[in-house]
Length: 115
Image (cartoon, rainbow, N blue to C red):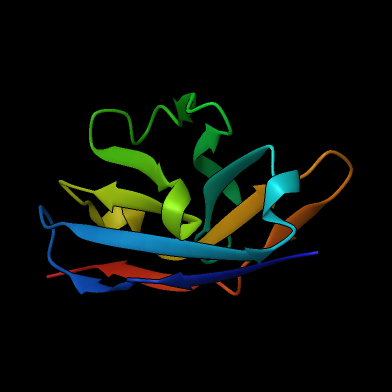
């Protein structure tokens, strides 16, 4: 089992920045990749970015050049640095950990981009 705890969401104006954190605990050595998903009201949950155990990263086209995913193995934590935020980035952001046969989710953190 893996437990994930997110933090760092909030309200920000368009063009602003936020950094999300996701701390993992439990069977962390079984994690193959971790990532961030988001779900806006009335929409399906979508992948934002992920990072693999060897440091490889991938991003949704909508966030490329604005968001950066990174990891700190010493803290068992991943981060999502979000810059140049847009109103369409408003959503609940979920941390995800992928193991070989299971996936685990955090509780979600709200990000609202509004003036």
